[in-house]
Amino acid sequence: MEYPGITNSLTITQRYTATFTCSFELYSYPFDAQTCSIDLTLPPDFEGFVEFSDDDGNINYTGRRELALFVVEDMKFSEKSGGNTLIAQFVLNRRQGVILLATFLPSVLLLSISWVTLFVKIEALNVRAIMSLTTLLVLYTLFANLSSSLPKTAEIKLIDIWFFFIIFVLFCNIMVHIIADRIGSTENTSPVTKFNPKQRNAWAPKRPSSERILALHRYFIVPSVFIIFSVLFWWQVFK
Image 1 (cartoon, one colour):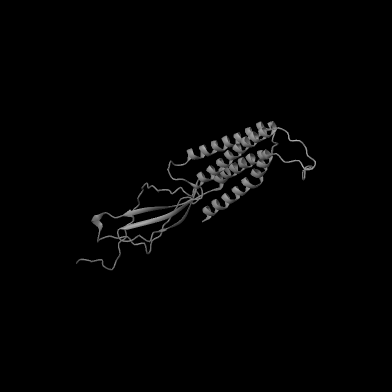
Image 2: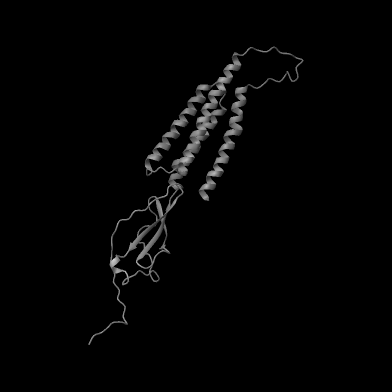
């Protein structure tokens, strides 16, 4: 007598160990969330006999949720699963705490130091130039160290745009110091005009052009450009 076993189900449990890779999109670094997947495909010999079913299955992640750089979230089966393919998806959400303290905060402080040099008196060119150049060199060193720790890619990242902007502003501050000093030297060597009491508002001394350039740059240009860029940058981040 043969027993067909048609009323009983057969379950086979197997354990596999494998190494997989995940392609990262680093444009939004350090605010990125990487979606990774593990694809399981049956051999062609099993087609028509064995197929995957994720109706009653679930993903059980036994490791730590909070890793050194990421947080593992949203583990589920992909909608493309079925037949001879089973796709398990999960999200690696980057932890930004240390990155914000190590990159954005120092860069803002260096930008503030360079901006403060615009308030130094016009005669102290050495102080203004040395402070501005030092902040630029320190910021570039910070950016180079950060870039060396990232995976090599030709794609421009948000952190690159941030540092390029800060470096450009610091460079403009140095150029403004040099131009203002040059204009001040020209004004000092120009012939002195005689005082004419009949001129209108002759009692009010005229402000030198070099000081007007520094005042315009420190009160209007730098703050307005930084605010506009910050709004666009953080809008892009949270978009």
